[in-house]
Length: 120
Image (spheres, rainbow, N blue to C red):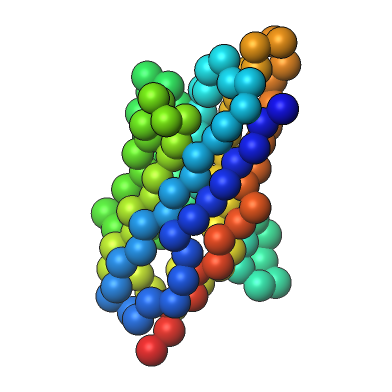
């Protein structure tokens, strides 16, 4: 019913920037919260940033002031601008969308993951 496609990961030096994108397609009626999570090797998946419809953004303390989440409702897309990247930001990043379909189903949808590696 719904597909999510992520893009924008890669290898960057410390202090560099990357922008992740996540676009949803399918029988989408509306999307409430859009967010980004990450999972580093050997660690639990953690929330990076979340942006509810009409609500205020929520950032992990470790990324405040460096990362910015934004959304384009016309494209069913969410973005994560990551600046001043640090080696500890290295992880697989997943987008997460709270989607309501035209049939009324509510789907907790995940992207396929994008590897972000910060290394000199």
